[in-house]
Image 1: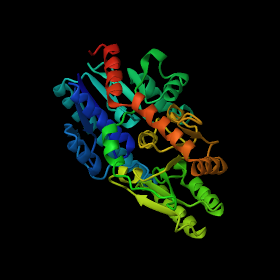
Image 2 (image 1 turned 120 degrees about the vertical axis):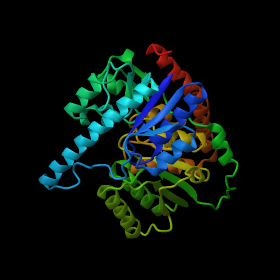
Image 3 (image 1 turned 60 degrees about the horizontal axis):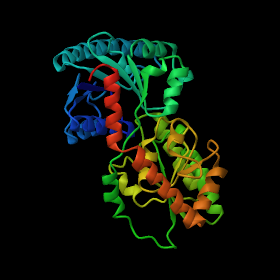
Amino acid sequence: MNIIFLEAVQIHGGARKSTIELARRLNEEGHNSVVVDFWGNCTDFVEDVKANDIPIKILKKNNTPIVIFSSKNPVIILKNITLFLLDWMKLKKEFRNYQKEFKTDVVIVNNIKTNSILRKGKGYKIAYFARGWFAYHSISFLKKLMFKNNSDYFIGVSQSTRQAIFTGGLAPLEKIFVVPNAIDLAKVEQYRKDRQARTDNDPMVILHCGGFLPAKGQGMSIVLAKKLKKAGVNFRLILMGAVYDTSASENFLKKILQEIKQYSLEDNVEILLNQKDPYRIFMNADILIHPSDTEGLPRVIMEALAFEIPVIANPVGGVTDYVLHNFTGYIATHNNADDYFEYIYKLYNDRVLYQFIAGNGKALIANNYDKKNQVEEFNKIFEKMGKL
């Protein structure tokens, strides 16, 4: 099976890492997967693809992709639109030539930008891989038309994503498949064996992973930290994530830093930016909190459970595929700091409960989210597409 993962990567995060791992696993099982990237401007992503021995094709090298609304000046916007359309036509031509040479069976896309240079009925199947939460009401009319009319199949990472695609009227259920993320448990165990020995006097390490944007919930985490400090809980909160190259992300980080100082949380809250090896942080964490507004099937929760770290999270997207309330973790009322405090306090004071929750989470991941299951599900999809 000749498979193209078509990308237009700006920031190398969890979803892109999952794509690279999936491409590698498919190749290990005898498929021929390649990554095709629009511009190759995200060095971390390109290096990661190469490090996993996956062939990569860059359609049009450009270190500074065109941003249409880089200015409010209508003349500049019009100029950017013209440049973008010229760039889009070149990308489309380069891809058409490459896919013919590659003899493509399936092209897997995950956004409207990459979908826009494809056309159905060109000898390959188009599979739209919805890795995030598919919030249908937030999608523009034009994008809905493209999703519906320029995709042969949809693949979601969770059952909630599948239902969102179906109820949005984009495809019948028989054309929507679910392939969850997968994790390399052997790699997790290599890190876990190096976990530092803990004593009763050590603070509980609470981890929050996510890019610095309001929707990722760091503001709620600061409110939670205030409550924990006031209650005399011995804790350390780590906010780990990327700062995006946007004013919204940069300004939000500044706001969080100001609040840490304003509420005298410097001794309790630590910020770790753009970590190359997040497992080094995971291996010494005790609890993961995930107060996000929107998710698909968050990789970070899967990783936490594999590390036997209980998770407390908002009930968004596919989170409830992982977090079974009172069994593998706790589901909080959306961004309710009191709920997060209550569940942390339970785990902080009850070691038996902590081990029960942690063990169940690890078992869930080991039995349902290993790489063998992921590849088998993809092979079933290829068979249904008539490509195996």
